[in-house]
Length: 361
Ligand code: FAD
Image 1 (cartoon, rainbow, N blue to C red):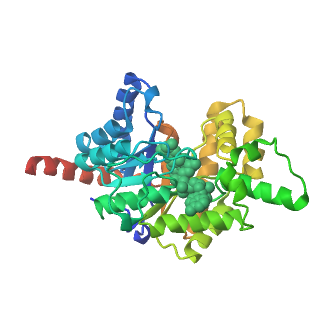
Image 2 (tube, rainbow, N blue to C red):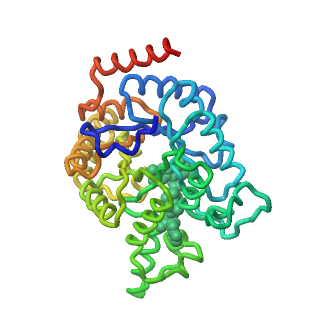
Image 3 (cartoon, helix red, strand yellow):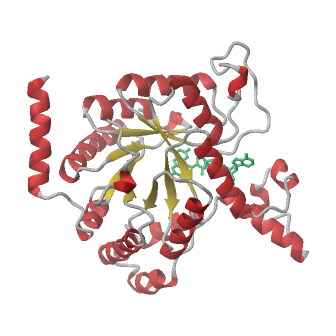
């Protein structure tokens, strides 16, 4: 069942849950139970599983997890897949695994910055057809989108990442440009370190924010049909960004990445990690209660519910993509506050439909 395309046409806001791959076997078992319970009780439109490029730290791969949630638990699943610094056979395998398990949704990502050299493998599966412009090595997410479309046609719905507050590399470039203009060049800054040589040379004078939008458009033109965004707390900026996205001719659903607030330190750490702005009103309410985790969580639900209500009311989106961090209660508390949890009747009907499916199989 492919259902991403009509989301913005639905009258009722929908939502999805994102999970990451746990490190231990026990963690994996706990996660299956949690995913299943959350799915049956709240009926998200889909769930997705992040891609762990350095798979060695976990005992299970994204592939296995996706295969099990899709084909064993029977849940509509989206698999994240990165493409840089990865052997194409790994990408081929991941796509094959997803295809064979019935998973029809891929979030196509670049992943870590690409290494400058890309080893071309003669006879590699990636060498499909010179006319397709599919690269032997994947430099950007758009290369992966193209690759999937060439190999699998319309079988997969393909999502791509969007950055309402900029991508760290573009922001670093922007900072560098403005330093050039003001003559304030600090080559030792961590921002400057983030720029690889190519990006420094590519000081074309273009506005990095506009460039990022154009790169998003390239991913859509390559065949993406939904966008999941980086987390954010600034509703006004997000609404403006959506208008810019629609204005440059992108007309596919945008799924805003919503990060519940669990503790004050995690809230600060994640915002810093993703380099996103924290609105002053968030700090004003959370800072005084920062030692009381329970209260932070409760107040956090109100703040994030307010954020969601604003962006839904603005009419720019009709879906919420929740970063669960593999926890149940923060997402469920938020959905409950937003009145988005199904009624008992809805879950009864859904469970009855599942039961009927089983009987009819
Ligand atoms: P791209 O769209 O390729 O963009 C990367 C950078 O290259 C941008 O700065 C862009 O402006 C620039 N660029 C793009 N095209 C061009 C061009 N033609 N010329 C010059 N510059 C260009 N990472 C993981 O490892 N696993 C995950 O599961 C994962 N899930 C994510 C989910 C979401 C919703 C988001 C927002 C991010 C996720 N990430 C994940 C992180 C992601 O891999 C990084 O943010 C990565 O640095 C960029 O990936 P991208 O797909 O946005 O890259």
